[in-house]
Length: 157
Image 1 (cartoon, helix red, strand yellow):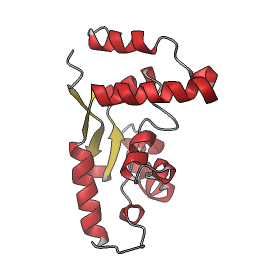
Image 2: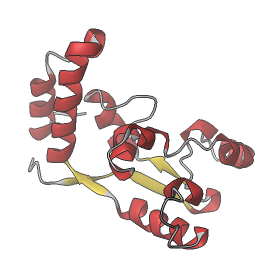
Image 3: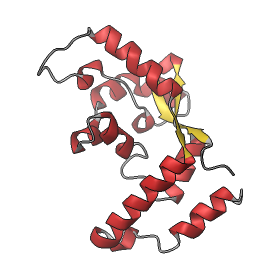
Image 4: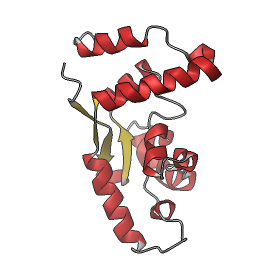
C-alpha cells in the first residue's frame, strides 16, 4: 500500500446535521492508539492552532442532546455525533470576520472533504507512541512498526 494513499476521516449525516467518524478511520485509529476519548482529538488540536484547546472542538453536549432521539432511532449513539458549533471556531480576539452561518458552512465543507494520508497517520501514531512510552507506559505499543507494516502490506484489518 502506498503510504500517500488517503483515508476519509468523517461521514456527514444530513438528517442529523452532524458528523461521525468513518468506521475505517476508527478501526485504524484504535489499532494505532490514536484514539483518546475520540479518535479525532489530535486532529482538533491541529485545527485549533496546534493547541490543547483543540481537543475540545466537539465538546457540545447540548447539541448532541437535541439530536439524541433521532440519532438513537438511526442506531447511532448520541456521543458519536460530532456537531459543528460555529462559535467554537472563533475566539473574538480580532473578529469574528464571518458570521456563524458562514463558519458552519465552511467547516462542514472542510470536514466533509477531509482525507489524511496514511503517512500523516503513521507519523502521528509514532509521536503519540513515543509520548506514551514516557508518560503512559501501559498505552505504549512496542509493536507499532509491525502494525504499520501490516497496514501497508494489506493485512489489516
